Length: 266
Image (cartoon, rainbow, N blue to C red; front, side):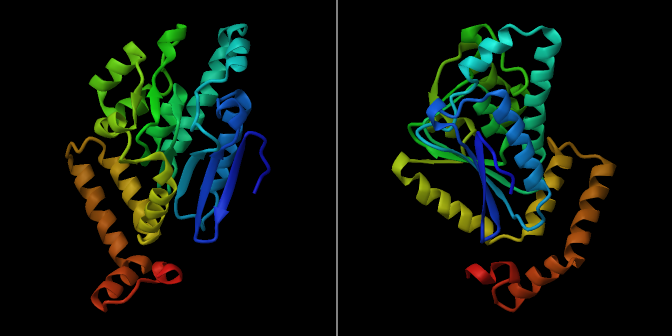
């Protein structure tokens, strides 16, 4: 895959990729280069039909401290149009991550501040250390969590988002789990083992079914019914049942054997 400066994209022979934020000397803080490289990496992941899911991680002590100070200083000297272009790039990253066809799992240790909370919120599932620290810290420096706002609201709800966006207070992994931002927490030294258990869980599932489920849930949205949505759901399950992978899964279940997608890891 493409060589990057601020990130690393690794593929596992089991059929998934890990996207690492790789500026540990800067606590994996964002800058324009990292945002652009993350977009390119997500494009590469989306184009690889052999990948079943994606892990998002940060090298070093912290997941990501948010925006890089030097980059913010440069942005402060830019005019409106240049800042709008920067915002567009960040939004492109968030929407690509949220819209990725395959499942995404974020692993959070240390700090996840500002835009990093947005990255976590864009993933389908996130796990983290109990002592991880989160903050929508933008208002402390006169800014706002604008681009990431919709994704944070989807992850933790409007009331909690309002609290943390206006107060900029920090909350730990346990609170993040209570809010729904994290699905599961553990002591920091147990995070690699927890990650492996999640990898094993995702590898046990039908790759096609996970992708179709993700697309289905995007259509379902808040769950408000309509004739069009009913038709979509009926057509989706019928299409999956007659697909090769759907037939294999049903046959394996009825025959009490391992389905083909699990065989290399059974």
